[in-house]
Image (cartoon, rainbow over all chains, first blue to last red):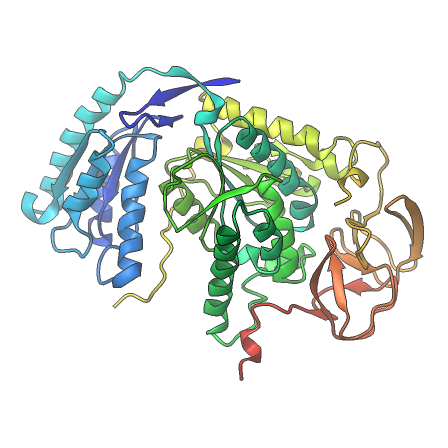
Length: 385
Length: 107
């Protein structure tokens, strides 16, 4: 099976052709947004970070911004700095440029304020947008795809039907030589022993167990029962009684393939196959991490129904709850309720999801894309100072 | 995993038992108190009277479960019973607790 994608100078393959406008601090977010709003192919990544962050928390923000710029769906980048933030503006630009993509930088304090920077930014961005518009798609084998699997607003149908069906699609991609990333460490709590058994090496198994233990320890430092936050009130209303139950359903998204590696938040996988990324269970921060790690398409299962998308990768929504599909068909791409209704098998629906991934890779817009859903958030691991 | 029990046989069931080790089933329709529900456990068809109104997607016990005993779904523990749960009872946050992420027990 093949798809039409965009070859980047680092030999990675994208399925969209965006100009990313990346603010290196919350203080440059509005200017970045204003520039992007004038250019059809441009997508801004306004965020609340970039300054007064320390140590690993600071590094994670920097790595995430760099990873997003490197994502193969991004053809070129305009970095918008304030000029006095903690994130090193030049380093972000240089690291992204190491892929060979065109990268430009403007700095608000040097340009002379909002109006001048916005005007200059639009000038630069419109030229880049014109340049990248001439990049032609070429045919590539399916193994060039990098899939992120996500679940949000889960209910009983997630673990029973939609997650296992996505697992079939994930296995099909991994078997074809592609990459699939499972994230949401919180939602491994109670199921980590099953994932550890699937790790390719004992060291990797140990890493998975430690990653989950660290996540659980962070939650326990707050001296409260994780229940109510995870599972969420909506999960509980939908029949999920504990984090263990949610986790056991969650991990089916990664099918049955062996686990080839464990990634830090926003880390780019070095090989092919199935990877696990250490992210929170919160959907938007989780997807941001996977996209910064190179995911070019996301499949997102939901039971309760959620509209969220992502700025740089198409998000394909799947629900197996027949009522949710009826209520929220605006937002859901694939109705997998036929599994619950006994009309189709998990395997059949899994193959339909895989076909949809290929269709979206070939340019079909997802509902989240067509509705302009570009929710974005970077995971913080320490307080701001 | 016994996913063959869902889908493919064109029979609309009212409840699903995912793994033969499970002591709970999941309702896949709303179920009224007092109604009798049929479900498969592996190769065997079992039936049970339901003791509470059950919303779609919620769990009920398929055996008696004593306080302190694990609640098993997907063939794995999803928590522990905190009251005596009779076969046919609704199983949820009111009669089971999670054993993980329990920072509230730190004190």
